[in-house]
Image (cartoon, rainbow, N blue to C red; front, side, top):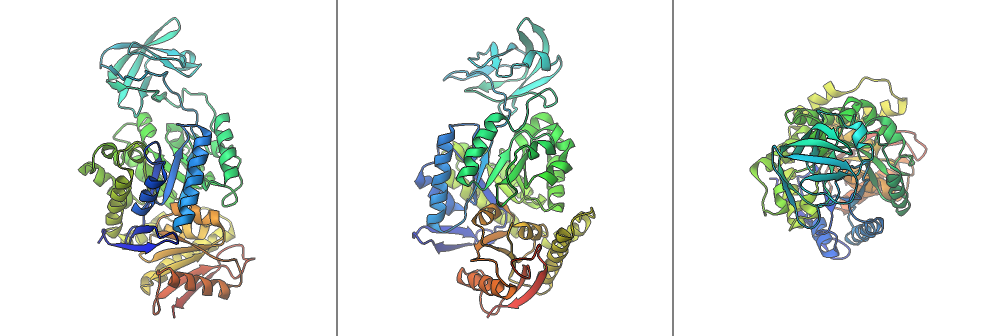
Length: 495
């Protein structure tokens, strides 16, 4: 059932393949092996819903050029493809190991010194000026994805003395994970804000903020609220972020569980439970959640994933992830389109086995009773009612007519079996909804009276093949363009 597909031709005669059952979105990171036009076309056809442009690597002009290429292809194929720019944040890196990798061996002694020039197997330079004063004896530091680590055992003049606890190869300029409580670097950095200004001017849909530690870090981004500005995605990858999770979720538009750096700060046995806790809190508050890092890591080189990776993707879907993200698998992998296709198939199969009725019962327990504005309470109540009506009447679709996307995101919390069709006249809202679970973003000409909007939405859904004559649908919308919230629920027979 998860392998069923529907094909439709775009205005440019590009065939786009969509899984009929997939509700969980697929985000793919672009890089050297996935930035050319032909590969991007293949990735869109394979099921990519959103691209991630990782600004930790490459130049600003190259990132902007890649963004514009995605926008052009999205318009050409007639399918929304969201754009997410990932800001570097206060990333600490080692000095370059040069063109050849070095191998650290467990038990060997190494030195860590402030600097940003070159590193060897004996002396690793770290581009953090306060390294000597902020890092203490007994601290554990790790490199790259965390597989290689060392413990600080002392200091000697201008360097720290360390012993390798877990060995392995290091190459290029790997990241150095220093415990977040030791770092005194602000998020976002000046460089982040420079990159952000350029992408906001270009019209990017979403921005991911790295190494968030509190809601204050999100507020410092300073962009206009979405959809006038980009949807702000907070990356949860520090112990401090976990401790301040509720405030961060309230301040952000979406959450990314960055399991690489988070796994460096938390014990490995704790990580799966944190993933579930974060997703659960995000669903309760109507925030999309991205599960990321090493989901299909073996496919950087292999044609198929490991059995454990396939189970990891399925479990992320069962936990309630809105989207699953590919990183190195598509950025530097040997076959990015195949990786996207594989991820889409795995997510579709998990979606087909999702416990929709059980989820509805969980949502009653998850529903937050915290004080909120009347407009939000009205939308919350109507989306809960729409989920029940759609289930009882076996509706084909739930149509959400929305200005900001909030109604569709609130509707997605209930994981309805019916398709969620989100209509908006705002192009950025449509692109931002590529991140939301089970949501098909569709264009609306303009906000008008309720009758006019509903008539257009039904016509568009029929023309696109999402509904047909005889179907019963639920429609959520405002009374007219002046309505401050979704305040009308209608059951419509499609004719």
